[in-house]
Amino acid sequence: MYKILEAEELTTNIYKMVVEAKRTAEACMPGQFVIVRTDENSERIPLTICDYDREKGTVTIVLQTVGASTYKMANLKAGDSFHDFVGPLGRPSELTAESDEALRSKKILFVAGGVGTAPVYPQVKWLKEHGVDADVIVGAKTKDLLILEKEMEEVAGNLYVTTDDGSYGRSGMVTQTIKDLVTEEGKHYDICVAIGPMIMMKFVCKMTEELEIPTIVSLNPIMVDGTGMCGACRVTVGDEVKFACVDGPEFDGHKVHFDEAMKRQQIYKTEEGRAYLAAKEGDTHHGGCGNCN
Image 1 (cartoon, one colour):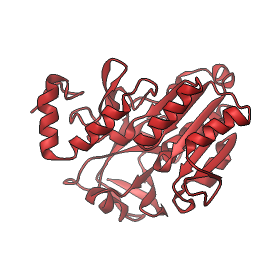
Image 2: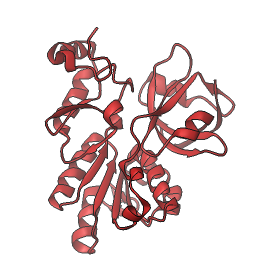
Image 3: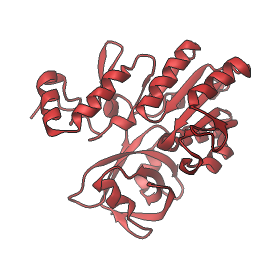
């Protein structure tokens, strides 16, 4: 059992929990995720790691209630426990593989949308600890839906907050802020990392391609099983078939076929749709086992 040490509601339907998970805390890196179950009969939920403390042996997760399983999870309190807390899974952020000298020579921009702020935070924090100040754009529909603003302020070189309705920070989509920073304010970026809803990442990549900024996206929003067995996170990157949970979750955003991936997500939601995809994709439907049952 994995004890929940802290639990709080960040905003409507978005919750943060600090979990006692020593082995995961010792091994995890920014960009990776865990699979969580509330009890032995519950659904497996993949959640990106928001933060970790190796000395205390804790891992912080952020979850949004989107169904029965996450609703049940959100109702757990400090002192309760998760039945399973498996990780770290997935590949760490590409930035963690570079030398400090190489990182310090780059101008890095992060773009976070909604709950995507949670997996952006540990990457920006890790860079800060290695002497690199990255610019961060955090976007939300309204001020009330912003999360982790204070935490992000402490680790970002420059933080730009934007709301779709203009209720706080800059007004408009994150794409407009990217364009303004580069074309109006003279900013230069060597790389952009975008994490958030699929539709947001799609349009961020359209903008950064126009501005000639290499871009990494994290496809954690399309993961279901988290092991490559279910085939849910199958995505085409360039001319190759990849699976977000085992090959990623990070990919070259300018090569991801977002429209195909989003359409596939909708089809996958029904039992009939899953059967259709399994029949259509054959042996390539799964990433882990390579076979359809």
